[in-house]
Length: 354
Ligand SMILES: NC(=O)c1ccc[n+]([C@@H]2O[C@H](COP(=O)([O-])OP(=O)(O)OC[C@H]3O[C@@H](n4cnc5c(N)ncnc54)[C@H](O)[C@@H]3O)[C@@H](O)[C@H]2O)c1
Image 1 (cartoon, rainbow, N blue to C red):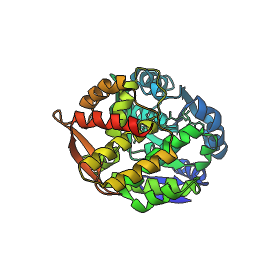
Image 2: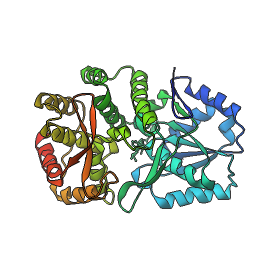
Image 3: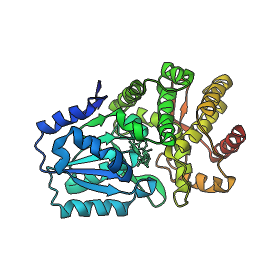
Image 4: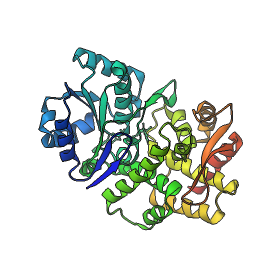
């Protein structure tokens, strides 16, 4: 069992995380509990949760449809309407039981309902355990732009129960693993080497813990992303633009898959800017190609990707600013990158995965 101190709350990780949650709930005097879940976490995780925390038997359950398409304002309105109907007051507790879609949407809903009610995260996907459930970023997609509306607000607690992963599909597992590789690559070369040398994945709890420690230490230094927290966006500037370009399509590209493509493109640009050597770039490329499955980015999407980059919240006065690698295990923020370099990197990415 691990415990990490975050901003005004604790992150509990391990087999006893739900017991810790029970104890946490007993110390508070919440008027009501609301649990937000999707159809999968309702089926696989809610019974386990309630079994550990009997007090939650009386919680109101709010179910949303799984998937990125749910991260929208209409769904927020529906959840707020349900809270009003159920007379949710300032003193209730909102519980996000799910992956990053649930915690992003639920955190945002809670952050503005009655000017903010308490919420906690119980992440159930690997991506949410290692990344999305940590750090207080919440949000939804709006006007075709990923995470364009949201808030940065810390949960009252995060309870990571790795056994939830037993029912997570393999592609979703890899989806989460990509963010773990990312945090290792930007902040802890020894952790990166350890991940790269592992064939299977043993010690998933330790890996989640390490990832949380690394992310948390960055978030604590810069909660509102004015500075060093931007390093977490490595792979995401191009990754998010790819996701945004696909939002209105039926694409099933997962967040982590888009980030992996972004990581390859942004590593390539790091090499072109002499921030990493060719040898280092090839190590990154080969490690990722060996571990993950990659799909090409159709050139018909390039224009939409470049357009999405122009709208990216990290773009300042028309200049694209990326967090790039600065040697292995280190990152340099606010590096200017032009759209031609992005387009070239996408073309080269397509040639690498052939
Ligand atoms: N706030 C942040 O800091 C942050 C960081 C990274 C990503 N994100 C966001 O997170 C989202 C992606 O999160 P995600 O990958 O967890 O997606 P997700 O929430 O859609 O979950 C992935 C899938 O796994 C299912 N699932 C979750 N837990 C399960 C379990 N234990 N058993 C069986 N099925 C389970 C879900 O129902 C869903 O179908 C994106 O919207 C991304 O923008 C946010």
